[in-house]
Image (cartoon, rainbow, N blue to C red; front, side, top):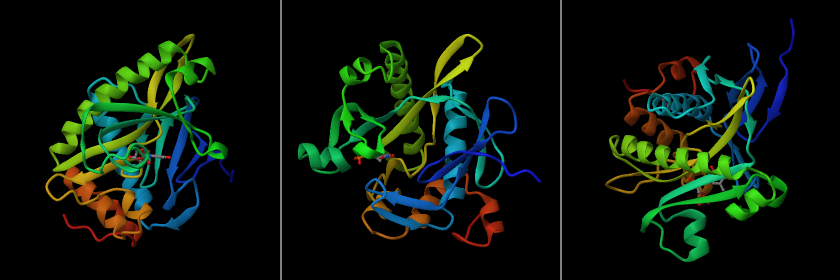
Length: 254
Ligand code: TMP
């Protein structure tokens, strides 16, 4: 038997060589980290939920014409994705003040922003993913002006669509982080949505109570992380039945 090749291991995911040329297998771990790895834990069932939630959101986005790296889910913890060249940026969209924006600019958490705000962070663990501007991005060649233009246009569409989708599930999309990649098809390149969209990289609040249904429960030691992620999956109507097969994690109510 041949052992499959690990391409990359991150904090919450492992990338393995794919089954077909130009593909990669994305494995969702149960590991959670915060503060650039300063805080670590394992949250049983998280990987299964994120795999399913990300599959659902990427598929819905593909349905409105947003190009993504997602091909198909393979099993409870793995999905097949297209091999892309990751652009070293975290694109954060904010609809409501929270987290680092509230801290940095002294705006009370929960304040609705006058309009959606896009921020960029340079993906570099050694530097703690610093906040950067479009000037840095184009001057240092992390993305071209055209790449950036494509990313912004996609980000605005994704935010509009996901805000509505979550609102329909009684959830406020406070903010979230996206990553993009370059997909090469023969001599042509296009920018596609990559990585994952899950409660690990979104702030999701109950629309009436503002209860947190995302990774802030872990970051802020609030407990109930898997329960919150399960609630998101349940409200989206996609609670994975297979999670029961793992004989761990949340108990499912159909
Ligand atoms: P922030 O308020 O800490 O800057 O986070 C903004 C959003 O981006 C929030 O939904 C969490 C997400 N995020 C990530 O997914 N990865 C990260 O490394 C950081 C800093 C934020």
